[in-house]
Length: 213
Ligand SMILES: *[C@@H]1O[C@H](CO)[C@@H](O)[C@H](O)[C@H]1NC(C)=O
Image (tube, rainbow, N blue to C red):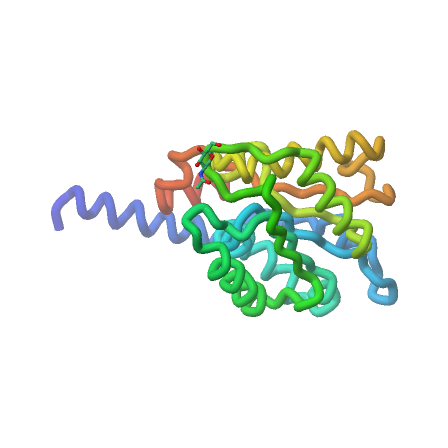
């Protein structure tokens, strides 16, 4: 074998070994830990911008929750647009339904918004007040205690994604209630994905090792 191929094989083997190495114990999120089996847990709401966000960005989190029979019936999805940038909104809305079927989100735990102020568009930010109204309505109607969504980087930098955490922060400020930090607070706690820099997303095993470390 040439020296360079030996190096590459060695690197890949090392990557696989490092990835198989047990990760640090993950702390159970407190909204999960605090509810004992006898009590009805509050709802957990995923807020996304477009159909396919749920599987492209949130599948591992959703599956972890949905595979737990205690929490599965309380997982909800609120998608803020039909993803109509290319005129395919109707098909994408149907695809979202099928995706949620496969992931295991119950039929009554879903909403897809189709509102003129929330159009799928890679150049526009969405109005925080409009997002806030839809989120507020959903969390009060369904006793939502935890929200999962994008962080301020939106994972891919899409302005529609980035608008969501901003709107939720504004809603929290308006409610004058701590959304995060205090587990006994009646308002929902917010959990966000962490946007990784481009080089980490596209360096394959190296990116995975960096994430693990
Ligand atoms: C996105 O928004 C820009 C600016 O408002 C507009 O010019 C463009 O037509 C929009 N694109 C779509 C697909 O709606």
